[in-house]
Amino acid sequence: MDVISNIEEDKFAAMVMNAPVSILEMDDRGDIVFLNHQAHALLTTLTPSFDSKANIHRLLQQLAPDVIHDIHSYTAPQGLIMNDIRKFFFTRDNQPVTRHFKVTATKMPSETCILALEDVTIALEKELALRQATLDKAIAQGKSEIAADVLHDIGNAVVGLGSYITRIRRAVDGGETNNLNNLAGFFAARRQEMAQAIGEARASAAVSMLQNLVHAQKAGQEEIQKSINEQLGIITHIQELLNIQRQYVVGGDMLEKKPANLRGILEDCLSMLYASLEKRGITITVGVHAECAIIQGHRTKLMQVFMNILKNSMEAIKPEASDKLISIRLCQKGPLLTMEIADSGHGFDKDTGSKLFERGFTTKSSGTGLGLHNCQAILENHNATISLTSDGPGKGSLTTITFKM
Image (tube, rainbow, N blue to C red; front, side, top):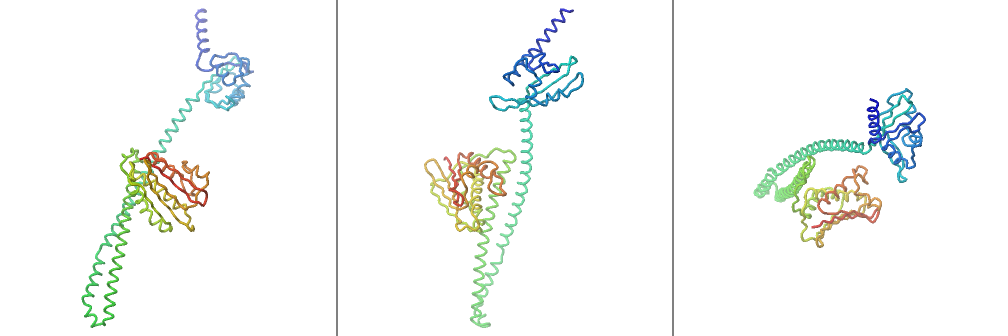
């Protein structure tokens, strides 16, 4: 039996010595009683000057002060001191390093302490990454649901607005103008009779006044009809934007790219911004020097880019500015199609210019810092580049978009 016991003890000692976990035993003074191979390799890594005669208490005071504090604070004659994850701090290549170890410390009846150390840094980082990914997914899902609700509400509002404008058009198309026209014709036909009753001058004035009213009514009606058609066109564009955004919100793939006329897209954007440009007193000049301004792309996403850039240029021009100009130039040179949008706005310095496309950076008090960042992402998907330059504050800015055809 003694022989068997010795063999079993040898096996157990060999298992501990070669265990993949660092195991060491120390006395109450911190002197090493036992050290397996993994523990020796670990301590040598943590402290290159380590030797088996080092005092573990002093070493732990440097590497993990809270561990040695808990060991010193344990007053029971025996039992589990700790079994949790602790941080170890050390230096490697003159750089501070932090690793996470699962530490198991047990007080033995023989007044010694057995310490087991397992590096769980990678596992912990993976777990944290998984948690973060799960959290990000949940946040994205929440944002998608909120965005879907917002898009739904906007869609309903746009439909309602379209209905009201359609009712206005029907009212404008009513018979009031025809009635006035008929009345003017009636008075013209009875002019001689009216002249006998009220005099030639008064009869002529009445007929002329009615004819002028007819012309004014007709001109006003045409202007209103033109504005209504423009508004309905804008509503159609907004609905297209909403439809595209809904597909992105629900996780749909980007639509197949189709031929997109950049000149037509630009004209549509300007028509949508016409009222704002006129209200701000901003003059727009457009020069198209491209024989074929058609690329393969997503019309609505490109419209989103142009609208964002044009609005930025508009907002950069102060209301009190003497020069309120936005110049747009579209030209083609070989396989490159370039659009330049220059404005007479407040411009920016070099430091600001280097940050404009960073996600979250904005120069506006109420901005999100996502506009230009998203524009850049959309253009990259269209094999295009964008740059924004300025000669300095007060000297305007120039946005250059280059498409490879």
